[in-house]
Image (cartoon, rainbow, N blue to C red; front, top):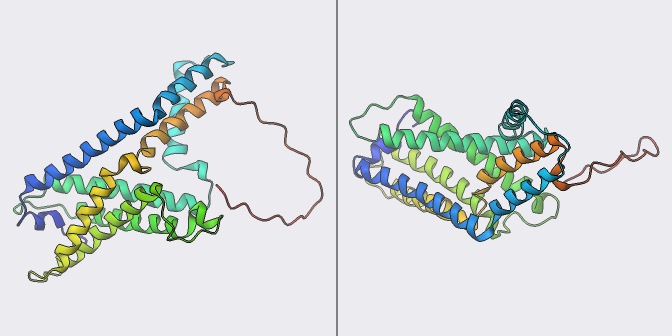
Length: 266
């Protein structure tokens, strides 16, 4: 299972061009959904207007080298390792989901566009990357969904309470999980039983929900969040602080050994 390209087997009954066209359509849905989100919610417009206002209150002009340094540190720290989440469970779950998704999607694209022909010989590491990425995504996403969501962890809402914003994480978990089950059943060679075909359909539907629901979900935060992190660190470096006041002095500490409840927010 882990060294078998599931799309190569699928290509015995479904033309490779159909698989490739499906991927292209999913990419188009992401682009369209993101553009509609930008136009309707005006997030990007607010972002640039706020950055323009912040420049007026900057106390220092950053050189090109300083900007590159700030951006590089932001990419390595805030984006690549999500350091702003601290060293707790939330960060681990986020990293599992983020890098699992990257591996899962990368493996899908490579195997569909380069090795989907039944006669092609897929290098064993690509199916391994695909399966490991799917497992990481399911583990990280499920960990977050059942135990780490703020409304579940801090506000005592039941884990099965679903709102529109949850579409992204649920569809992401579903697409990875159904993809794994489909690959497993397909590798068992069930001789035209319905099992693998049913999970293939579920895999397709979950991908349609994931990539087609960009406007209604938090999918676009993958594009907004890196830009916001870079702008925040640039604003701190030039002294503008996004028009926010400087941090106040730390309050005095009264008493020793006070057992305070651990904060449950992020």
